[in-house]
Amino acid sequence: MTDRPMQGRVALVAGASRGIGAAAARAFAAAGASVVLGSRDIGALESVARDIEADGGRALAVQADVTDVGSVQALVSRAVTAYGRLDCAFNNAAGGPMPAPLAELDPAEFDLGIATNIRGTFLGMKFQIGAMLASGGGAIVNMASVAGVNGTANLAAYVAGKAGIIGLTKVAALDYADQGIRVNVVAPGPILTHHLQAAGPGAQRLAGLSTPMARTGTAGEVAQTVLWLCSDQSSFITGAVIPIDGGQLAGNKPPQMYRPGQPMDAGPDEMTRQNQA
Image (cartoon, rainbow, N blue to C red; front, side):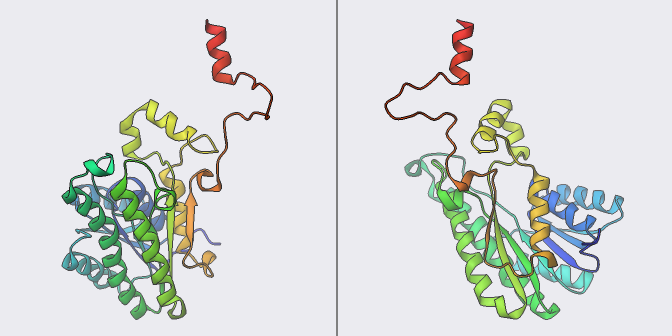
């Protein structure tokens, strides 16, 4: 594998203004691709584009709303007009209500979560696929979550949206598998982005402990997975759900086990409390 496996290719990243999307845009550019960045926050997008260009890459920032048909169509058209083709796409935009029990959700906020996740991913693929067919094929990666596979309390809109993205990904993969277009979906667990950073050290510690690897992931780790899924190194992979979760979807890893009929020894936390007493 060369240092610039995406040389000569064009990648589009929707939801590229910060976090995982920005990291993916930088990863595509570092691998040699020309990158088109889409988001509602044009100021943040332009900052990411400037960083890419300062490192010798090619980037175009385009303000876009993934829930709007005309906006998404224009985003893809700008990519093709600017660089002549479209080879890769990462649909990463997200949105929705704050965590709350299902019956307490505002229907309008639930609708926003569904529109951003499911409709936004559908619209992205609808126009990306057309551009890729004209270019001779390509690869699309969609953003889901472990919550779209197993569910998470208080996140009804988010879970429904991410589960819907997984379903859309599988259908698109089947529809275009014999036409040179691969479609996969990543399902991250707790990733240290600006959201988790803002939640503070306590939330970060709990997020890390929720994984068998006992740590959070990084935006760079997700970005490198997306890059690999768009590369020739994954040429026989389509319709797959790829966990990036430190082992969460593998099952349960209890912090301490007991043997039936026998008392359980004090765990590390309990021993610490006893020593402090």
